[in-house]
Every structure is written in C-alpha cells, then in structure tokens.
Image 1 (cartoon, rainbow, N blue to C red):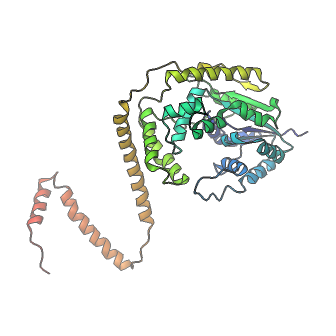
Image 2: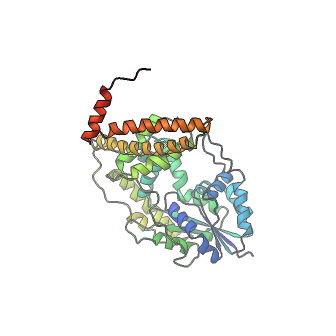
Image 3: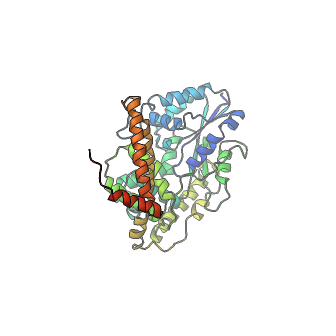
Length: 400
C-alpha cells in the first residue's frame, strides 16, 4: 500500500482559506525540504485546476490557461518524490461524487485526505454578503439574511448559493461517499481575539505537520469593509447593472474599489438581534453534530457558538446617505489616481511616426509653451511674476 498522502483543503470559503494559502505559498521551500509539496506556479494554478475539473468559467472571458490545468496539477503531483502533498482550493467545496471519484483515481495510489476549515456562522454571513457585493450582487443585508435563513422564501441566488458552499453535512456527504470518514479532518477557526497564528497551528496539526512548519503572512488578507462601504458597493452594482464582463468587474473591485474603501474606518456590518437568535441555534446544532461524527476535529466545536456576538444597536438609517457619499468621494479619488497613472503609462508606450527632426522641433515648442504658462502658474505667489503676466496680457499680438 502507498504511503503517499494528499491533503486536500477544500474550504469552507471565508474560513481563513486565503490566509492559509498565503502561508503555504510563503513556506513552499521550507515545506519542500520536509518532503512536503505545495504545488502552485503560477499563483492561481490550483484554482485553474479546480475550475478545469469542475467546469467553472468566468462570463465573457477567454481563459486559455484553464483547459488542461487539472492534468498539469496531477502531473506535478505524480512527479513529486516526497510522501506528502498539500492542495488548498475552496472552489472544490462544489465537487460532486463523480468529481471526487476522478480525484481519487487520478491521485491513486496515494491516499486522499480531506481538510475542511469551519468558521462561526455570523462572521461567515457578514463576509459572504460582502463577497457577493464584490461579485456584482445588489441584495441588502436584510434580503441576504432572509434568503439564508429561509432559502425557499428568499432569492435562490442568495440562499441556495450560500448553503451550496456552507452546508457542511451536505458537503461531507458527497466527500465521504468516496473518501473514508477517518480521512476527513475538520479545523475549527478560532473565535475573535484568539492568539495570532492559532488557525495555522490547528491547520498544520490536521495535516500531520510539526508546529511552526508554516511561515505566517505578514499582513492581514481580505480585510473587511464597513457598513457604509458595503452599501456603496451595493449601489454601484445597481448602477452598473451587468455592463462589465467578469474580468473587467473583478479587476476593478480587486485593484481599485475595495482597496480604496478599506482605507476608511467606519461602523462595522452588524447582524440584527433577531437574526443572531437563529444563527446561534444553527451554530449549536453544528457543534453538537461535529462531536458525534467520526471525523478528526482540531479545535473545540463550542467555539462556533461562543463566537456569535451579543446583540448590539443597529446602524441608524440616516447614517448611510452622508457616510456613503463620503465613501464614494474616497473611492473616486483613488480611481482617478489609478487611471491617471495607467493612462500615462499607455501614452508613454505609444509610438508616433514623425521623423527625429520633427520630434525635436515639436519638443522645443512644448518647452517654450510650458515656460510661458509656468510664469502664469506662479503669478499668484510672486509679485514679479504677476507683473510679467499682466504685461504679457497687455502686449499687442505680433503682426504676421
């Protein structure tokens, strides 16, 4: 029997996956020396492989690197001479039994283990609502909560989509139909205020590595935005109304809008008291279920209940208009700076057809024009420059 083990971290989404993936990526060389492979060159190779396997594509985008990405990942794993491989991609939470059977077959004779990180439901809902807004959705928090609480009565694209990614029982039913339950490892995401690095410690324990095997990321990843910033995203999505393809939209969100909004600090997104009641109840049911199942659980499932917040006063409605306007100005200023810089780069790369002599003469005229207007620009700060400017204005134009 093969001693090779493949630990497949499938999420759940919004459970510290990006943090752990970054830690694994930073630690690639150290892990390699320990006989552990974390494949991933380029950075998104594992995501492309998962999309290839499951059939995911972005709308309106030609993704030439996706076809064949799964085979490439499998080939990389097969060439590895060590005894352990770690793969982390939360999109695999969508895998169905036929996909899982193919993974087991493609990685055979290595033993496939499944690692699932689980976060408390309250923080998950807040984070997923922001994520949905960053994917062009327009639901209010109240609409999103209703759909998650009662998928049959809310928007299917909200409630059903949520539980497809976060119904742990349903997800594990698919995986344990192929993978033995004793090879399923559940990692409880620590509650707010837990020591830094505790999640990484629990994750390394789940995959059988020594404590301290991972180098932790230096900066926080996927920082949340506040209530006003989330509302601004929602209103922007309503105005855009699908006019951008997926790549255009995601680029703007990732590179411009969300980084701008994260610079602000306002009231956080808060779950209303009536929703905290059912969230706490659902969390308690999950904690009890984890204690009864034959999975390897790292961390205390009770933390999933203890992490749920105490009730707080909701953000008043009148807060939004002024705060959203302020957030919009911040975002617009960053967008203007971003596009000004990129526009200049494109202009500098542009090549004209003029001869060298023509370019030199044109540049000389440009310097003369700039010098004349530099005097005008300084006129408000210098009496001499102001006098020169007014003399120039009174001077009659030269006759041809």
